[in-house]
Length: 74
Image (cartoon, rainbow, N blue to C red; front, side, top):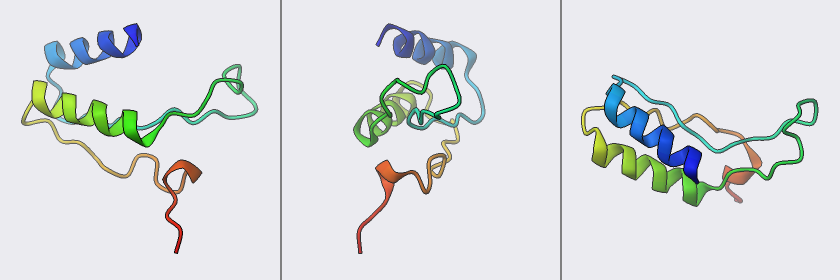
């Protein structure tokens, strides 16, 4: 969580025009393969904080499209 707080502080100070965030998606061929996937809840929470700290920022909403965490059952 400390890293996330530092990232949010950076966004607040840097004030980018666009900021794309999404859940962490581990890949089997990287050193991070054993870390858990990010969650929809945390992603939405962070998006809401970014919106509050930097109102004009553009926030793309499809960064994790197709990932199994975000799939919808029909």
